[in-house]
Length: 120
Image (cartoon, rainbow, N blue to C red):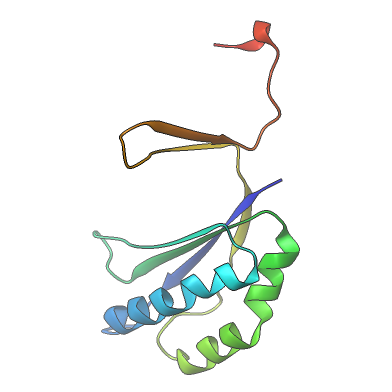
């Protein structure tokens, strides 16, 4: 089952911009390890909060990305820019949806289809 990993980074004082830029560089590397998508969001109310997300079909692919040489280098280079510990979490995808370029709804469900009698 597909999953989304959330990595909640929290920058140290006056280092939010630098951490944001570095996380934005490492996030796309997830695609090399089998990710089907990635995102980095920065909180507007607390600009030290940066949320990295990556979608994988298999948790083992995430583990390879997190323990891979690129991420090891990232954590060494970014040392002192973020608070520790970093406690990422794997989340199973229940459902997600987006609009495509033509404004049409695209939906993905990580849950097995229900019978007709179970619909809302």
